[in-house]
Amino acid sequence: MKVTVQNKKGLNKDVKVIVDKKTMNSYMDEKYEEIKGTVNLKGFRPGKVPREILKRQFGKAVFSEVLDKVLKDTSTKALEENKIKPAGQPKLDLKTYGEDKELEYIISVTELPKIEIKSVESIKFDAYSVKIDPKETDKRIQEIAKNQPNFKEAPEQTKAAEKDLVVFDYTATVDDKPFKGGEGKNTQLTLGKDLFLKGFDKQLIGVKKGDEKIVEAKLPENFPEKDLINKTAIFKCQISSVKNPGETKVDDDFAKNLGAKDLNDLKSLISKQINDEYKNSLDRLSKNQIIKELEKFKISEIPENLIEEEVKILSQGMSEEDVKKSRNNFEEIAKKRIKVGLILNEFGEQNKIKVTEQELQAEVQKQIRMMPGQEKMVMDFYQKNPSAVASLRGTVYEEKIMNLIKEKAKSNKKEISKDEAEKILKQSQKQQLDQELKEQRKPEKKVEVKKSPENKTKPKSTKTKSTIKKSKKVSKK
Image (cartoon, rainbow, N blue to C red; front, side, top):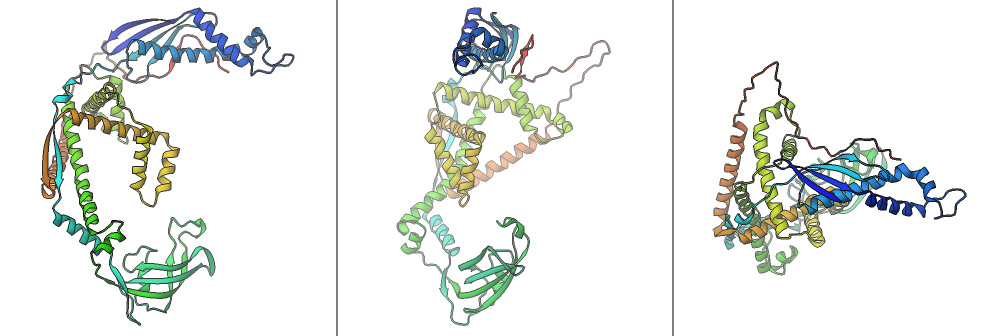
């Protein structure tokens, strides 16, 4: 294989590739040997069909497959050997090809710019840690206790009121017919929360232990039996208990009910939980500070095709007229995003950062834990959507890169209180909102173009074609 790199302009390059006739023929021989053992033709034993017969029957299809394979193998190798990292899909233009001929083609490619990342170590950012006052922890535990009342059996003949717990068995019918899921034993409802079926709770207000109560309720849109959706069901409820809410005592037993070893352990867990709530938000602030610094890095040229792709993402759902009005602003945002992405990726490659399968699965489990009760649905989603898993891999990859940058950069460590954390986060949100409003109000630059009937200038296309341009038609079967 002979490769010649020709600089066209800036990041655009033409790479001329010539694969000699001998190499092409070896690829063809290999393919014919592969199909010889699988083809069954009348009059020939398996694996004994002559080459000329195979060529007459399958020649065009074989050459088409070989051509695709050679183009894929040699174009990748040509770019790698010349250390050319393409920004987007290269375009291939075939010049010479055919059976028993050499292959000559041109790779038109936009190269990623060279990036200097040494100055990453000079980046400065604030690294926050939040000191949680024990009073804050106690306050949070009291709020939890308040939302988990200690229900006690009400005196005989006590009528159920709002906030009481009613325990009952029920059987339900639609049009006087029982249905699947229409029975329940020891069902517990806290009146007033309306967590069962809409309007069900209110109809139980006033019931007593031992009562039989008829309740009517409409079955919801997500009811499993599709033919019963939105139909009115009649519930015959047998009330077995009415309980009044009492104050929950915060002690070791209370802590154990919440999964802690004892009350002290619960306080430690709650303190960490509060800290994590602020830590995640403050870590995002630190990350934003680093990104702002990365935006200041100088990159000689940003590939136009990447800018065009990013503008399309930014303008999704907008009318053509609105996109035109905001074009300059979108391009400015796109350039910043692409620049940061290129720097982070280069940093990751130079430091050989990889995402292991264990790390990826840990992230999937993290996403599953964030949606309790819907674990199977989330798991199925990731199993059926490789693109979603790839997106998660990208998230983990970026997080690992940012963590390494934080290690190498200069951190200004600050221990702050919960109130100070809230103040910093509130101020940050205001600044972000102000910046967004500023971007929206930024006037577009008007460019005056003198019109001349003799010399009309057409806009230059920045689209990258991923098709293979062939000078002659290649037939595929």
